[in-house]
Image (cartoon, rainbow, N blue to C red):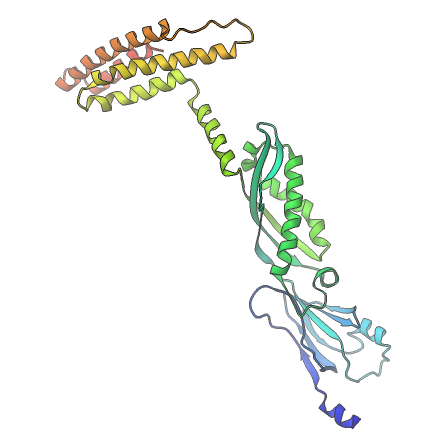
Length: 347
């Protein structure tokens, strides 16, 4: 009976793993009740590694190559099983294959905004996302710390843990860097390199080597982005008086083509210049509030009235000059020179 059981046993002569698709990080070779024939052939391809596990203990580790399994190529397993040099019987052992290919385009990002202290805005809530890549370098650590005895361990199974480690390190770095949010976009490469250096020991604990780490975007939540856009817009406007004059000057040629001509925008021009100068004066007074007493402004200041009167005269003159252009008496270039001269007197 024992002899018949021995005859029914199946022996493995070739051990190899061909990856089917992407995403497998570790795979246990299907053994069931099979036994490995002494002298069997082990094939480990490029971008792979293999380990033999005896009774829960990692024995021998193999890199890429073709191996004949004997007591010479399995020194640790030979020691654990107390084999002698003449051992030629089949044996049992768990065999695990690991993929050492680069795992590319792994994504990370902040699921919720993180709060950091900013030089310009005080406390800021911000988001960030990017990509990273890594590869397995030490199957012992991955098997011991992560994958264990599972039949398959997928790259996606590890993503959640790695992503949380990345976000934790990123939050600390962004808070400690002292880089204002406005300057972060210009420093994304430097932030990525610094984060890579900070994360390498964390990945190494799991037998992984971090190959690249990229910060692709740093942004504010939508409601804070609107506030920032408003502030940028005010900075771009700068001097309100000059901004108003610039807008009016650009509108004159267009207004001359419409019904009513330049005279139709006279009131608007005077009002616009008056408002612009009044607002500029008010802003100047606000800046000097700490050093000089403020005088209450009347609803219609002399400055605004004078600006409106002066603007009406300029508009009237420009209308006459534009009529001369239409009649061919003045050239467009001459009109433009005169227009610039007249508008310059309003500054």
